[in-house]
Length: 176
View 1: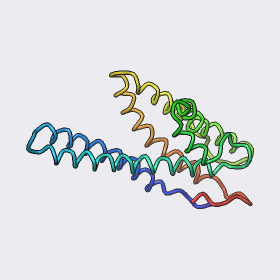
View 2: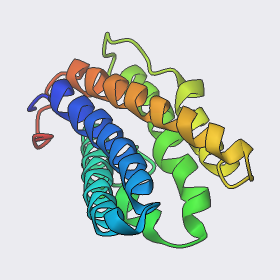
View 3: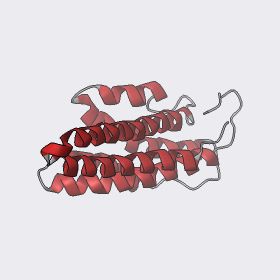
View 4: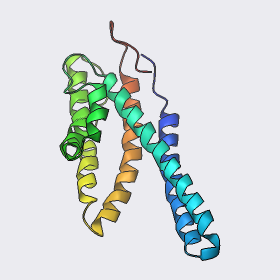
């Protein structure tokens, strides 16, 4: 099984989200003046691209984390874990299955296969979908979203460590 690059995923997610915030702030500042409005739009577009990059890196990581525990007992496949998140309304339920469910299924995987690796903190993985729901509440949502950005970075690191702690299983394909 190929190891996940923690530096790549943390750098992509944290760097992409950091660039997103910075570029959007610069875009807002520049858009407030008629003379720099076009520059502001340019920074908005750059910010959107940085955010998109971070989101794609996150979804690739989600796919790979689910691929690492496919032994016939996982609650979902890697494709469903990612794909069902794009179904409107259903994704409110599915984010709990994809994020929190992974921690539960990973911990079960460790027990089933007698893997000597630290279990994932299920509460931390539950916090992401809960904060995602809270983020729709006016005012409180901004704080929940900021907290969730930090949690995404922490969880990405934990996922890389967890997947990298798994031994290669005979008959199972590489994580890549």
